[in-house]
Amino acid sequence: MNLDTQFKIKSNPLLQRYIRENSYWYKLLNRDPSLINKMIDNMKIDYKMTFEDKIDDLNNKMNLIKMFMETMK
Image (cartoon, rainbow, N blue to C red; front, top):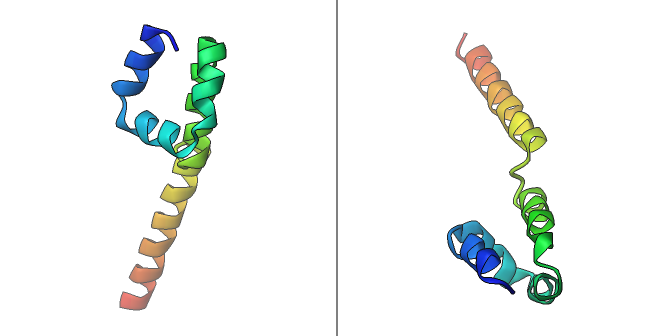
C-alpha cells in the first residue's frame, strides 16, 4: 500500500475501523491503491452514511416528532 493511501486511512478513524473489520481491503489496496475511493463508498454504505440514509433518518425523526405532537394534543 502506498504512503498516500496509508495517510488517508490513518487520518480517518472510520476508515481505520472499516479496514480492520474488512481485512480483505488490505490485499486489494496493496494491489491497486486507486481502490481507496471504492473502499470509502463501501464504508459509507455499510455504516449508513449515504445521502439516502441521512434523508431516511431525518424522515424518521420528523415522524417521531409528529407522533409525539399528536399525542400531546
